[in-house]
Image 1 (tube, rainbow, N blue to C red):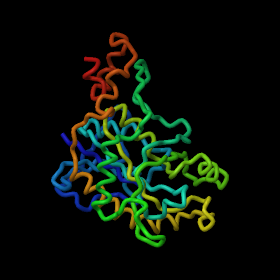
Image 2 (cartoon, helix red, strand yellow; image 1 turned 120 degrees about the vertical axis):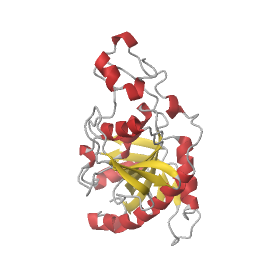
Image 3 (tube, one colour; image 1 turned 30 degrees about the vertical axis):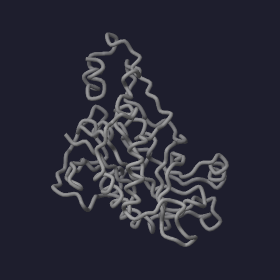
Image 4 (cartoon, helix red, strand yellow; image 1 turned 180 degrees about the horizontal axis):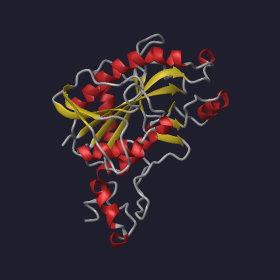
Length: 297
């Protein structure tokens, strides 16, 4: 069993330090994941890596099979997921190449599948605090160990820093925001904007997996006077450096795992299943056994 999972986003398609590599094709009740999971050893720990957008970055954010990706990690035995994601900045303080470890989400997606339940089984997990706080602490400490000082410890023209806390707006995409939308998110007090992480976090909570995001700032969103035309070229120019930083941060975080899972993530389903056990279809019980087996035996 592998307890640590890594999801690589735009620009992060591999982990250079990963040794003893092996591809693990995984089939799930929800279809195929984005790619084969790559298992191996990182800083002495067994991990499973998944390229979120597939090999060669083939899958749009709205096309991602989030359920298959997270269920696949669950089948491998994963209890911690470190996710890396490219984001746009909605505040002057979050500069391109900075990292942010968010602690909240705001949902602007449209009808994406974001639960394993339904079809005769009802469950409502708590999601007031969508990220695992202890795992986010690990990620924040790892970023500092990797050489990124904690904000606001820099000069106006200083090197990238890591910020702790903030709200990630998850938008549908694949187009970037309009200027009106970007200005509105700023008025609402949002911090960064991306297209992928919300569904991962919801499904990880249902799967009782600790989940944290390392948000990699590639650009100021279009609100910024010098970034009123956000281009793919501008973003790609920062992806490579962000990917190098992310690899170091993730490796440092993996070295600090595991920890005692006393967080709410570890038992999120304990009181969440509403349907009476005898009313749950037998086929569904078998299908979701990795999630609910210990509660509906």
